[in-house]
Length: 491
Image 1 (cartoon, rainbow, N blue to C red):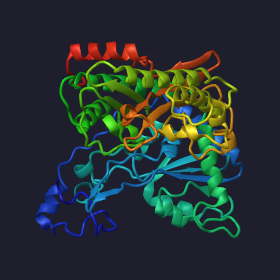
Image 2: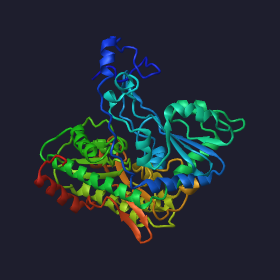
Image 3: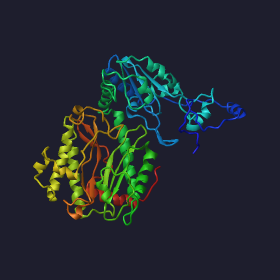
Image 4: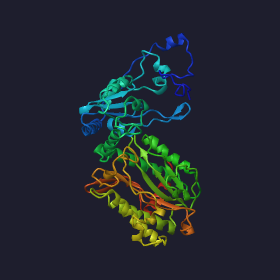
């Protein structure tokens, strides 16, 4: 790795403290003989969608200026950065995927995208700066980016002056993404000066609630992510031996290959839990190994190139067949999921999806002889003892974030009704910890979760991840078919 890429001791011009002092002969030679080229950019098809979102947001705050940064690169270790992932709200409003950019939305909806333009050949930036195109590749010019996104653009160097002109009390900032922006725009909320003040918080809420309803373009993006995720699960099944163990990280890597090939990346840290690791809800270490006779739980999703992500969980019997007890647990979770999916209709309370699934699980736990009380008593909000074996909620919104719309108010999300165009997960599970002395020994270390991505429509729920089978017998048949087809590389 070239050491001048990024690091501590960065100078204001983007050079590094350890950069060499080049001789003038070299500098003079580097400044000559470069041909200028333009990128063949055209307006993106989704430009009108982003424009409608910006207009709706501006309408929610008449007479005010809204500042939405995307964020900066994050240090991974010393002088290396993580791969940049844009701020979700910024990407939702602009479609821009570059780091450091800032959207300024003025009263009436007039928007300007402040961005770092192409490194100029008029200075040595293009070969000396950490932002130079010989180091990181060709960036678009202001004109090229404006054409692509349908947005007026300005040089990022002009941002400080633009922010200095904004009126306190008439400006809202999406804070926590860009320290430069946070410092430049004074927080204005009476006596409250710490953290995200109320007025800025209202901006984050408004964006989150706009994201609840997906438009046709967003639904297509989510379907693309789900389809790629189906292919990723197929890849993993084809690489999973029935008669010997393999590492969880091998399977994680097989899926990650599909995610990087067909999309931007994985949408979140993949959970690959073999055996008792399936009982750990957010198992991301993935340092275990599969064993024939045990179950393998995989919670994984591809994030597509426009940052919309799938979120799917499947449980496979490693040797190809569920044992009778494994099947009993699996079928109970499947029935619970089906009950939840059937509730995904416009006007149904979000919490009722969860309660429908939980009642089925409580009944299954009663059949297994585990509930110390009746099903009705267990479901009573003053008790909920059934949750010992199913800690998490059944659903969350899905979109440009795996846990989308997280800043929405409770009354419009967790305690509100579902609406047409919502996309949510339905993912009940049962988990019997290896140390749980209240369950029979043969159940200890068994974990089952089934998760799919559901679009709410006027005609009923649509399972966007239906390309993967859910019923236990169908899972066995599908696994056998994948193994017979053999391993493959994305292509």
